[in-house]
Image (cartoon, rainbow, N blue to C red; front, side, top):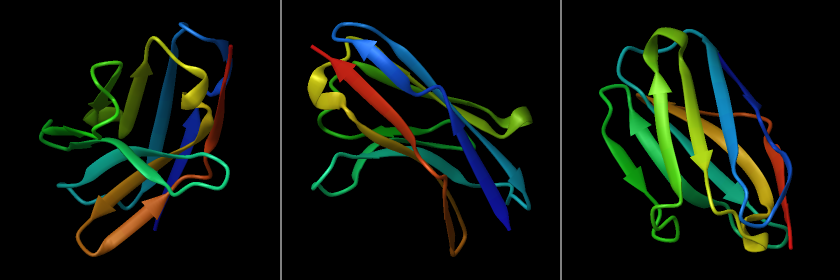
Length: 115
């Protein structure tokens, strides 16, 4: 079993930055993909970015250079640096880890961007 714990969410003004972190613990396969998704009220959960344990990244279309995903394999931790935040970035941000046939989610962290 794998547990994911997110941190770093909060309230920020438009144009500001936040850095989210997600620490994974438990039985984690050597090759895995960690990622960030977000879900605003009444909307579907959208992909923000993923990163493999080998460092390959993939970003959602809306990111457009404002967000950067990174990870520290030694700490089983993935980060999301978010810059130039906009009110429409307000959502619950979820961490995900996929390994083999297993898929795990964190509890989510709220990000609120005020105008």
